Length: 417
Image (cartoon, rainbow, N blue to C red; front, side, top):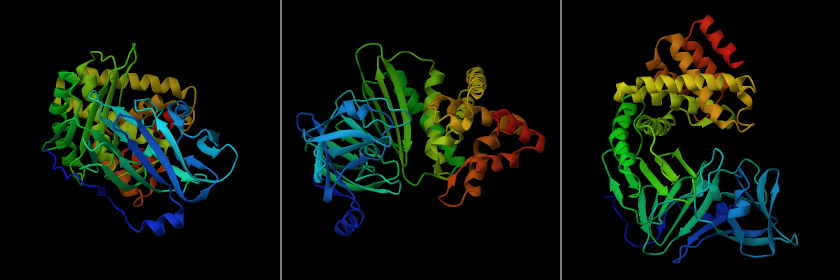
C-alpha cells in the first residue's frame, strides 16, 4: 500500500509566497469539497484587480457548469478566453464559483473532474489556472490549495494527506485525487482503480501494462519515478458512452463514462498501449505545439500497434486493418485541408490518423519499423535543443536521416509539404 501521511496539512513547495505573489500577482486558487459533496473554487488577489481570466477555455462549458456565487459578477468571453468582471466594472480581490463535479468531455483537453463509482474524484488542476486581469501568454506558475473532508484521502504528487494541501503548479497541471478508492502499490505503478470497472477491463490492464512498461523501459530512459495509474468509471443515464485517456508527468489516467459496451479486446489494449507510449515520449521530447500534435499522437498510434503485435502476435490482422483505416481517413482529410490546419479546424481525429500514416510511411520506406518506433523519437530529442519546442521542420529533418532522397520526397508529396 502507498504510504499514508498522518492527518496533517501537506504543504508542498511553499516558498517565499509574499515576494512571488506580490511580484507577479499570482492568484491564489482555493478549491474546496464540503462534507455534503459540494465543490467550489475561490480566486483571491493580493491587490484589487479589474478582471480574472482563465488560462484555458477550449469550449463554453464553464458558462453552464460554473455558477458565480455573487450576482455582482459576470463571466464573458474576451479574445476567446473566459473572463470574470464585476458588473459595475469596479475592482475586486476575490470571486467564487460553485462547480459541477461530474465529467464533461472537452475538445483535446482534460476535464476538471473524473468521477469514480464510489464518489471519489480525480481533478485536473490545469482547468483551474487563471490570471490576474488578462492572460498574456507568459504565465507559467500557479498557486493552488485544496481542502477536503478529513475522512477523505488527498493524493498529490504520489503522496497522501488529509485535510488540506497547497502547491505551486505549472505547464499543463496535474491530476489530484480526492476520495477513498483503494490504493495499490505494485512493482510497476501505484494504482487507484474503480471497482465498478468490468473484470475484462481491469485484468487486461494489469496483464498488459507491466509488459508494455518493461518494453518501453528497455528502449527509452527509465521513468524518474513510479507512475500513478488512475482508472475511473462514471455511469450515466441514456445511451451516451465514451472513454478518455491521458498522460501527465508521472501520471497515466483513464476514464470510462456511460453505458459500458463490449469492445474488441485488441482495441482496449491498443488504448492502453497508446497511453503508455505517451508516458515515455516526454523523456526526450517535451514541447510540441497543438498544430503539430500529429507528431506525438501518430507516434503513439504506431508504437501501440508494434507493442500489440509483440505481445499478441494473433492481433496482426487487427493492427493492419487499423493502419489501413488511418491511411484512408488521412487521405480523405488531406483532400479537404492541409495538415497544418487540422488543429485550427478542430479536425482532431485527423491528427491521429495522419500522424499514424506518417510513421507507417517511414517504416515502409526505411524497411525498419523497429527503428521508427524508437530511434526516430530519440532522434527528435537529439535534434531539438534542451527544452525547446519540436516542430515540423525538426520532424522532417529527422525523417530524412532514415530515408533515401526519393523516398523522403515521396513523404513530402504525400502530405503536401
